[in-house]
Amino acid sequence: MLVKKRLGRRSFLGSIIASMAAGTAGLAHGQASQHSSGPSLPRWKNKPPGSTWGEFGADDQLGRINLLTPAKVRQGAAEIRAGRSFCLSLPLDYPGENVANPDRLPPRLFAVVGKDGQPIFNRVYRDAAGQPTGVVSDDAALLYTQYSTQWDGFPHFGAVYDADGTGEKVTYYNGWNASSMVPPANRSGTEPWARYEGSHADALGIETMAATGVQGRGVLVDLHAHFGRTPHPVTCADLLGIMEKDRVQVERGDILCLYTGFDRVLLEMGKHPDRDRMFNSCAALDGTDPQLLQWLTDSGVAALASDNRAIEMLPIKPPRKSQVFAPLHEHCLFKIGVHLGEMWYLAELADWLRGHHRNRFFLTAPPLRLTGAVGSPVTPVATV
Image (cartoon, rainbow, N blue to C red; front, side):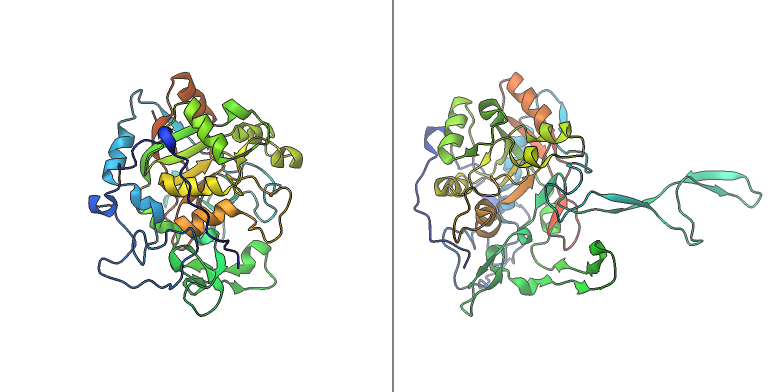
């Protein structure tokens, strides 16, 4: 079983965490939720220690995105003072190659083929007299949804767990199990990317998140200002100490963004990443710190994003026997319903916020409304 024993509850919020009342009205404020309106029995009899399954209903598929209520959107919009916007996405052909993850490849573009078998690219259309009437280009893309700036959906990370009392099986957030995940067909003899076509998340697909619009108040913690490019595993004590020094307050329903400087490292490598720099640059959260995981539960953050590869320090060093290989992913995506945003481009926003003694902004970050996908590219926009 991948799920560990329940963590001891200790509050590390202290004086730096403001009132968590904002947004607690949740669904009462009219936020769309992916669960039934009437009473519904949970699909699970057991829930993992430390999880919040059922917090938003037995059939919930949104998790903490439910906290992005109209009140939280207004809070975020109130942070717009200068009227300046920042694109928080890397170019989607970064990081380049497949060093960051050998299973994911850069995007490929193809010209759409017309009914005559010719590419629709710089294609001149003509009338009956042969006179040009227009030029058209059209393309298709082969895109690994979690190659670059992205949201991890809940089906991206689950656990082997006995949720219904019938034995351990593949299980995801809020007790949804593998029966809601349509497996791909095996088409041998094709290119690797085309071999397993037809996979589909019938529940927890990224389109449920996209349908909400994903707008609210972003809060940025500048880890780079304190650790530089040192590959430091950030503990709960580290994080809260930095937040206190920088006067950062996180409230329930905020989207927490962590700037480490890793985005600039990626850009400096120019799509030819060096493995040592890729895996040994900049701070990341210490997913093995139980106090940090508990803080993520207690703080009520609606989502968590960073400019680095995985938000948490991976691989874990040294490896630990029976250790979940990505404990923060398990805690957020499987246990408490917090979407994870990775490889966001936060550098320019972080510089501007620090230069103006601010750390809050209005964030818009919907994923692609791609039905059945387990993750998605995203082009987040911060407005200050």
